[in-house]
Length: 358
Image 1 (tube, one colour):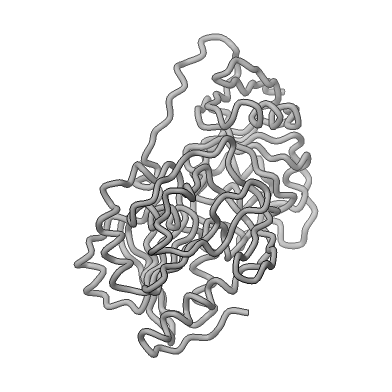
Image 2 (cartoon, helix red, strand yellow):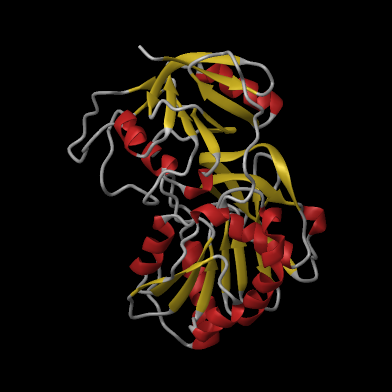
């Protein structure tokens, strides 16, 4: 047995068994409350630089399959589990979770009291942690800031379609966002987050989607003038980090939540209809309601649990943004109508027809 430890910067030590690459690693320790979807969670680029703690006690029972990856790599720094299943049972399984972590060079630790660990994070807020095989010689726990530059593609790639042409700006996009657009018949060009406005304009897209991604949105302050210029020129949808960046570009402010929203069970209320949706979320930061210019934006959704802003719509321009993930994966697909709303805005401005997403 490879004994290991997760050591928090606040001093708590959680013993367990090392799995995966078994290398020492440092990252921000965050927890996810989803009961399923561990493969999608681990491969979500928004977890870059973080150590994921799974609240659900058993991880890996249905194995790993070739279809449920949200990215080609795992960008998380580590994974913490209560119990790791080494004998998965599912017809599509081609391996188990510890094997995946080892293949991807990611450290993990299981047999951890994740219930006590999550309670600790809830008390302290998200903290930095260190996965190691020894409690001696703990390093200074420092983590990098701009993970978007690490996860974003370097060369654009186009996927064919017969409908609207969507420029998907990659801040760390999930494959399921691309899949949702392709399912609707869109042509999609995935672009590096650093693309210039002139280059994007030369592609003549019908609409722009600003994706999810990791980290503090304020690390991308240099991108804000360009983001605003894009949004003022094209129908635009922002998801998660994209939502925060759009808000910042129009003068709003963001701040870090105590321990973030991560999981597939977050209730969000539609302000117009009063209907409540259960959503998939993964973020540490939110847009401060008091900083939003109500002459420019309407607040479209709010979080039921803590009242934070979950969606915005520009009052004059075809701009939408949501803090939650309408593509889900993992999680409920209650809000995939957001894509339909975006495509309708494109149709109203350009006349280009695209299939609705049901």
